[in-house]
Length: 277
Image (cartoon, rainbow, N blue to C red; front, side):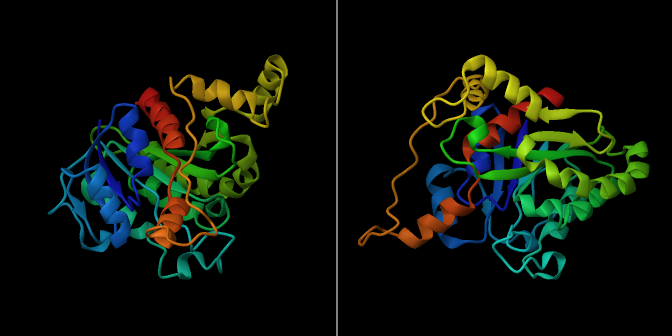
């Protein structure tokens, strides 16, 4: 499936989706340093600068519209202004969903969105005719030696861009968002009428840890089992010294890595999206 990448950063989502067979057709990123990184790794892919200047008139239609819009408005590390923050760019994401009408939508953000903004996202997707499911997947869940929880929202619509029944479910989805806010440790995904699950739930994880001997070398055994299905090994992260002199673009590199989506997580979620598709 073809992908249009919004808020691309240094391409964590893009790399993960490519690893499981998606084709990136275009990207969008405002930060100059991140754009240099994208140009290095995707030299032949068009990269647009500002999401606010994009629309159906200058973007190629794609099967999947993917991206992690800025997390600062909902992050617990910030002022948590949500929709009152000028960096709240979900409306631009939703506008492009409406104009491009992709078959699938792939959204990423931090866990703070569960209590500050999830209702807006689910409500807008439902109003546009998309049935959505959401939940938390961490880097630890794919075998990394760190937690890094992130919320993923997957949505789809039929070929005509209509999902009549989902419109009546939008209010229920909004009401249930607070209930799912307590499930971030579960690494589960539930749809708007709670019929499906994504990833592995808490009980299943406990059972697998028991069968496989629990923790080994400080890393979750079930995390290794989950990521083993991807056919890859976890690589050591790049060494960017936290206290160092003379590291080129050190501040930009640290900021970009901090904002990036772990590619192995994007790959895992991308494979689940393919299964649903």
